[in-house]
Length: 413
Image (cartoon, rainbow, N blue to C red; front, side):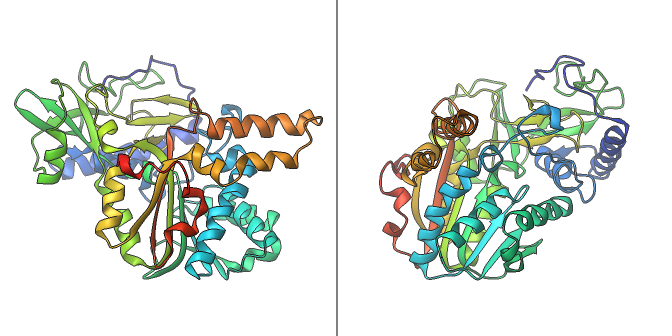
């Protein structure tokens, strides 16, 4: 995994940002040393994203937005256009009515725009619901979510509650948009005599030649470098890895955390629907031998790159989702697989194109941005094909959610 960054190619953080990142670097370095000098990448990613007060998601660094000028790092569908939430409200309404439940749960609610849009639309449609529960680890984002919801639907704020842990039991509709991709992954690399796990070491001299992270995007030397070692692999993972016709140096990921999260959700679900939206592939496509560097990706000021050692705590670190593993986790926990399809087909089935009829094409200042956003959401060259939607249910008729009536790809999992 060679770095694709040239020294100085990323905009430098301000002094506060640099100090924030330096504090997290020291925290991670101490844990590496305490662990004997080597840390699996999954733990490094967990610390970089979720260390209380310092991680990207838990330390107030995460920024959603459309442009780097506003200090944001990436844009999600709810930030792109309110039409996304309005469209997703249709299958959510189907799920509430079809399951006979009256509670919604959202994980990783971002700025709160999806929540506000869903609340507003369900209220307009007179869909009965009692509570909207947001589960989010970020205190800073919680406040932003509260403000967004209060500004959009002030009369519904008292129905919203925030939790920082999973509820003991779930009856209702669960929504997670771009949650799975931010869960820590293990890295595996093909060696001459088998598979090794890729981990992180502290290098006082600033990294090892040929390894990512030796030079950060600011041109400074990194404290971290890659180090590969043999670690135990369970039979299920090994059977997947061994199917890859991979040359030496091939790198890929495994998704224990995302599978465990899905399994836990499905176990806690007593009645209702789980709806997860993210970018990724089925197993056969995910572990394709031509995907030689895996899918690990970092996002900083709307620049995507492959070096997780740059500005720890200030950049997002993600990996695409193996939806075959996610499907199996939900099924193993007793949930029914209700459907799996591309985001583009899901949104079109849910009436996204019809929402454009609310705009007058002659009013170009409003119509063109809306039309462009719709195109981005459904186009195969944009978010329409790469992003997928998977749904699980218990105690609900699979045909109740009309978004899955055509274009289902469950057979590819």
